[in-house]
Image (cartoon, rainbow, N blue to C red; front, side):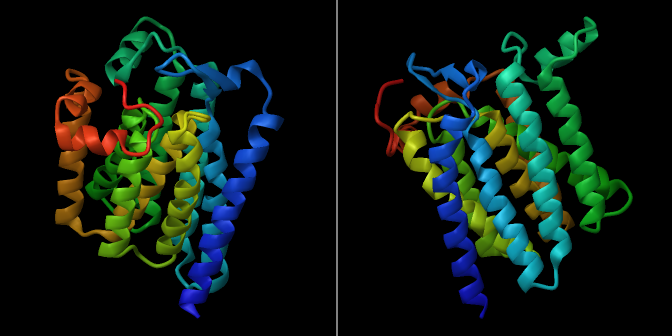
Length: 276
């Protein structure tokens, strides 16, 4: 029965993603939804919003077929909230304030950026999620930081078609192999199926994952990790996320990837252009 439930959930999630990908650009006609990518092509920018479909399907499947609904619901709620904040940033965001430091400087000058809204939202979502999945005391802060930084790092990677998506799929697959608590596994697997469908048009530069999709994916994976690992692993994950976030303020991930052959190969895999 478990295999049947997974098969149905993944199939429905994949089909829902494909339908949403076809419909979203037609329905969401505002000029704000269309951006120029790194090669000068105009693409549908907040396309990651379609990944709310498999996220929802996975949560419903968990509610219907498992007895561990809490993690699934927290993943759905957290991913949806951060996806919505990402959409606001995609459509109304100011790109002049980059990175957490840039948004903090803007705040000190009395200007609240959409990026700062995302950062605050990520912190709140992370803390609430950590509490709801069972952490207490100072560990709520540790878990909350993992969720918030996972969302932010996924967003930082989304500078080339498919980059954030590929890294997320690898991490999600590893997380599923290691084991995800209760109903969270079916949610993560269903979103992963949606990502596989999403990859084709993004690699062909027809759509962008955008902050909408990056925040949704990072938050969902972060909550799955916080709900599933022990203290030692949680601290290790936080250490990696903090190091990469600090590194991003000083080093261009794109430059590092382009100068490292294995990373460059993985980054360009499936893309329509092998250019920088």
